[in-house]
Length: 465
Length: 161
Image 1 (cartoon, rainbow over the protein chains, first blue to last red):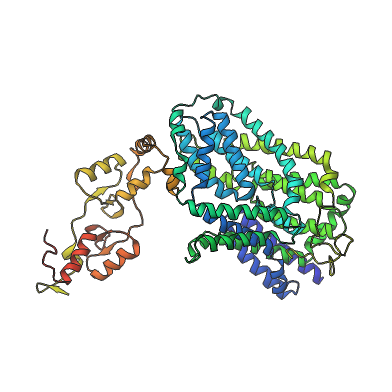
Image 2 (image 1 turned 180 degrees about the horizontal axis):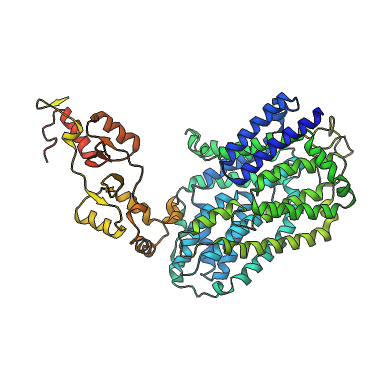
């Protein structure tokens, strides 16, 4: 009786909050914050959730990693290096439209693997439009390629996308684990995506660029306004990437790596100045939104709802793990195409974690979730922040990106990407699902194992450590 | 405060506003500003009520495409041709679409200090003076406010137009 009440109270609070977030009637941060407080108050009244539990439900590893990288990027974006790289890359193509798609697409992909997609896109798009106008070709295929390939590239690494950060944090997947499992599949999908773009934009690609000598005359060095800061911040970034490669070996959480980088950047760039200006660029709204989601989903978990959900699928997951992974892949992709993929990821993580806590091999499911939410964002123009930004920036060009145009290209890319991923999961599920990832000791392990002698205890899923 | 025995109020120092009616195009507006050598126009609706203001900044903001607005580094590489094309694109846009809409105003009987504070708070350098029906009856600019301060300091050249 009592459990029933708790079950329904927490489920209703969760469902109403998520529906309002998805409907976008209120700002997502506001409604998530309110929902988190209601969940916590209900938890205290009905005795299923305490403030201490809510606090430990917040994954500070995710928040710290995001905040640290935001701090580094806030300094990096003022140096002009994005524009520098954009122009340099474009000049190498000599204005050939197809090579421009490949080159600028590669650049955004690579940058998105380490930096956040939104910053990368915001800074690459204006130079792209200027270059396209200069040589009188349509900027549309370039812009769509940049957004789509930025999403695909971000899927490859632990730090490329917020969902990856969250999944990596709970599943204890290291930076290198992503390089070994996610990167190979992303690489295949990346090349196929490029092939699709080539077919879809055959006509645009055959445009003859004009004023190419004007493009070649652009001096990319003009973009660099502050070489000293640039040198320092690139050094910091190189050090951060180096630490990511070894973070698991030296027992350093990814959030620590990012925060060490941010601290270094602050002290090396302008130690005497109040960092307020840089700190204002940390998107506090995003961080509060994530924190609130963790609290809401934590309430659902403590009310036993997610455990019951896991019960429902545990038999299927045990008997047919590959099928389960493929269902997770497609379901999360389709949902991520239609709605914000963050709330979905936050809700899915404890479900998979409780399967893991009950002895199911869940590594394959983690990767399926990574690919699903990563590739799903390309399905519609509202599926990813990068898509939303590119569409809005294209509005003032001569060829604005329409909803239909995006679906035609992005939808195709998403479906083909998912089909290929399905095939690769079928072929390589043993490799992907291999539990023997060096050093991996996820927090949801309920008992100590040979590999993780310190794991376990109360069997409670602790998100974060 | 009094100057020459007379108290100094907004209505004593304000200048006549240059008024345009809604419906004008970008091209007409910029021509009027150039011909009349003015940097600010108060926009009124059919009933003569102030609904907005146009100044060089609103013109510039409308010509510069959104994707360049926050990126002075990229704008460095935008050629003169792009500027010319963007200007041509907005030539026929109606004034309602590029005028500044949330305009801070003062009333004729407000104090001068209030006008000074409104100028600081709003960041506007030109403040329309309106009557009870929100019809523009005057304009305060930096020049007037500067002259007021000059007058308070007994500088003879203040208000000597």
